[in-house]
Length: 228
Image (tube, rainbow, N blue to C red; front, side, top):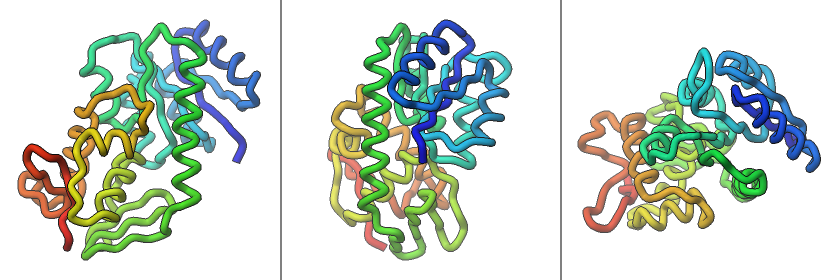
C-alpha cells in the first residue's frame, strides 16, 4: 500500500505546510478542514496514518478519533494547541497513538510518523496470526479481539498492550516497561498513558472491570496477564 496520509486541521496554513513537506518525501496527502469531512475521507480511503487536530469545527478531534476507532486501527497522531496534560491523555484515551503540541517543527512530525510506521510494519512482519488463551482469542489480521466468540472493538494500542501481556503469561511488567515496549522508547508521554489503556481494556473485555480476570494489577509493581 502506498504511503497515504490524511491531514485534518481547520488552519489552512498548517495544512498547506504539512501537505507540501510530506509530498516532497513521496507521501500522497489528502486534506480535511473539519470533523465531518475527516470522517467522510477516512471512511472512503485507506490511510497509512492520520494527523488529526484536536480542535475542529462540526466535530472535535476526539469525536473523530473515537468514531474512526469503531472501524479502523489506522495510526492517529493528534495535533493540539493545548499544553494541558489532560487534553493529551484524553486524546490517547479516545484511541490516538501519539500527540504533538503546536507550534511544532515539521521534522518532529516526520520523525513521529516514521517511528509509528516502523513499529506498525515490524509488528505486521513478525506477528503470530492467532493467539488463544482460554476464552480469549486475538487475531493479528485487523487486530481483532474475541471473548467467548464475541468480538470486542479495541484500538491498535489496546490490542498491542493486550497481546504483549497474553504472550507473556504471569510476567509482571512495570508501567515504564509497558510504555517503552508498546509505545516505543521515543514516545514523549508518561505512564498515565498505560493506566488509561489498561482501564479501557478492562472496561471492554472484563465482565466486571472492578474485579478483573484477565489483566491483573500487582500493586507497586505493574500489570500482568493471569493464566486462564
